Length: 392
Image (tube, rainbow, N blue to C red; front, side, top):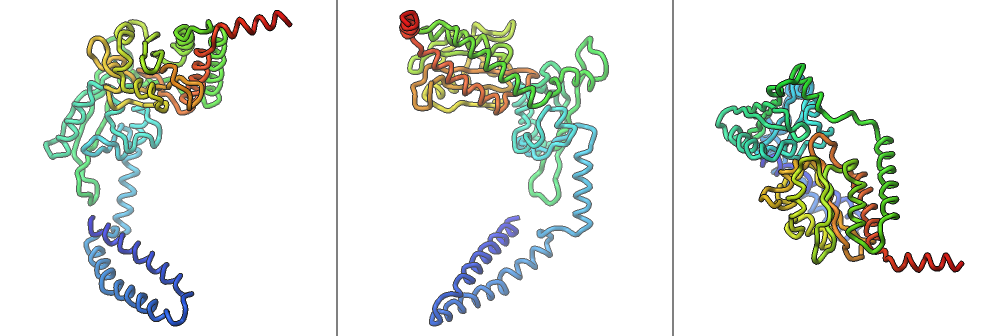
């Protein structure tokens, strides 16, 4: 592999030097001798160094196999993609290298999204450490493993994972083949485990037009709430805004007022959720909130990798783990990019709900500026406006 990379670098350098020699044809006649000497040197380099290296790599099979080998590889790739079982190929760090069509539908991952990302991002936080440890053991050659995990899209349904070592082609490192299968169905469930899992999958996507209409409705509801909120009361404005966003847009809505000295004013969450513990949390102990309060950019995270990024609640548990967060938005509240931060708004989605999209993040960013404007609107200005209207 190192020899192949060295050969490729030498060829690339040679091509660049040849290009320079071509551009040197316009030099004065007296200097052509120097250019000719350089061209002869490059030809000697090809004959004495590059050509022997090419023959050596070709003999060792590093420059591509025969036509039957390439046909065999294409056949194996097609079989991998068409397997009816969800199958994923990962490295020793659990990073996805390939995922077949069945695994894409099983995990709910969008096409092309999972490749290059850890497979643990699709699992509950409680299962991630065990999965990483077992994957590393299989990659070391300690034998095949099997364990039960839970996907974030359906946390109440167990998934049986089988891990086996695999050496793809002539690659120097061992990969791990992961087979996903629904485990034992919950008591009282009807149908096969696959049917039970599909029954709890997210509703079908109705199209971008439907999502765009939903964002427009949300924006209209937010505008109405902000225009009718009491002027001069930032906490009341945040409470109105949180009421619009929960639960139609987010499962959790957390509002913090202020920047230098923050105060948590509103926490809305699912029924029977630890809302009180999150409300009692110090906003300064939340890294995401603290960064936004310092004037940072809005944060969009899908399947957050760091469970400590929103700190711990009053019970000492990481908030993201306890709330089973699958995606989050954290935006500073300010009228314009160079204005001071008035507060921070954080939104969580959990369970089988679709993750926040880039379009939704943009809509929340726009609403955050409107919320900041409503927070800075003063009651005296409204009274003066009413007096002018009466005088007219």
